[in-house]
Length: 157
Image (cartoon, rainbow, N blue to C red):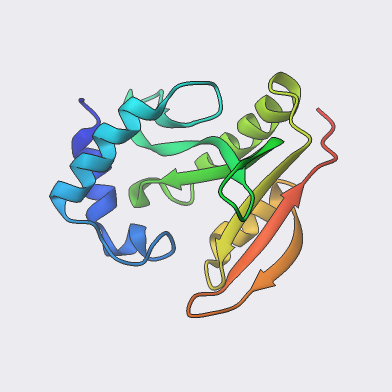
């Protein structure tokens, strides 16, 4: 519960929400999302609080969550990488560090065969991080908002 304030601030920030939904959430929506996230951690395939050890402070959430097919069913042995770091901590390599750790965890511990990531076109920093982590571009999906779809499936620890 101590992380709720930072979580809600991130969810209400136009800068943070720009590439992950676009619209800032209300305080009530952010609190409901925070409480729902507390309930949803049922296995190791989840998005986790990211804590900066040197400050013992919540700075975002990162992890692997199920990759779903178009019918909304989880795809066996696949996951989606999520990296969501508070703006104050951008540019310090924390997303890259977390991404590397979760890729290793996914392939080595969870024995995944494939990890995917989606980045909105225009989010150049996230695109750079995903490529630096070893992901390859699979396709570009256009529409009202356009997205790059990446994958990594031949990981060597």
